[in-house]
Image 1 (tube, rainbow over the protein chains, first blue to last red):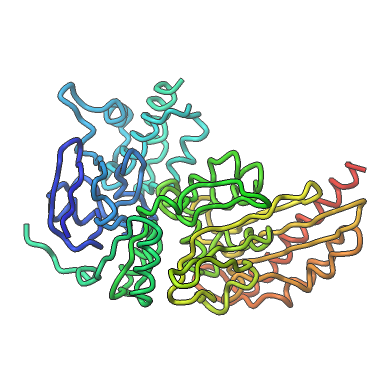
Image 2: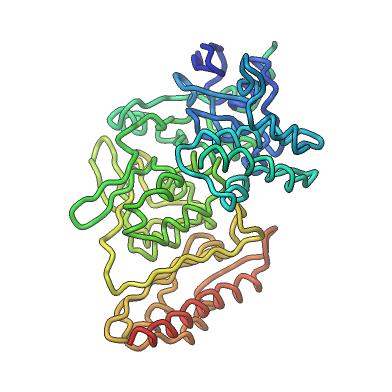
Length: 154
Length: 291
């Protein structure tokens, strides 16, 4: 099946079986290996990408459902002017250990930065509930996200 | 890069653009699996349960959204848990459905998973199912040949992961009856973790209290048997008198929990009884304050 979609602002087209997981389309067909596979069943959030701006687990999205839609991955966060402010905050706070969960956390946090709704510091932990860090480095991750997200929306 | 062969490569995909097309595909391919948000089906496929064909209804816009209709609130089958959780209209009709939708996985899952999918997947642990039973919700199913019909939630589940829906029928919507001013409703999920755990016990309940007397009661549980289940013996014991938390004692006879990876039958029985008793006691105290 022909999958035409927009990846990080660029038109992208691949011929793959329609039920191919978006995660496999990105990693294996396109070579965009930013999104990581953790559990493969929507529990860990390591494969989180934005589909039309909404955070989703790319392991649970069949490619047929991204036809004509916009997908954003961690590769699309950095711009010509530098890192995204959430990436800067992760660096400043040391919010990464082994790094496998980091792209998923960044995409979830990026969607919160860009949300039109105000985000409270209390709601940050709840919003990050679907992203697991097996190094358990949550405190620094939450601090980085709170700094950017709460500032960005208030 | 060469394509790694995967189990899903051979799945035939039929895409429906609108409802008539979805219904005609359903009629032509009664054995195909329906693909909505994919949050259950994609996991099933990873576990090796791969269907020969799927009908993708995700683009069928008619099946999305929340609409007020005479006598009820219609929830399109493809409406996501997140949309429902954020809907002020749904909140005003049924705060406990909003609560249930908020416990379905994390944001990533709530944004993809649909209410119709939660019902059609027919997991005994489906978080919204006991609530919909307690609210006397009906599901609307449609077929190309016979049009639409409604099935009360109480009669929908005929066995483990099995619905009484014909092979050519598609679940298109859910109808919530108008809430009654004297209704008290409750949702309670008990899991390992507050966020995104599959439930060990999940309860939806509603009592209507008029002049201190219960005139109608609904008590439904999930994760305590092969299907979500209503405890009619408990409901009957509650009706016709003031709220009596002792009625919760009958819960254990009305459910058939099992031991599995998430919990034990003994724990589930005890917790099911206790979550109902605890809510009824809370109501008793609050009703006294009211009067």
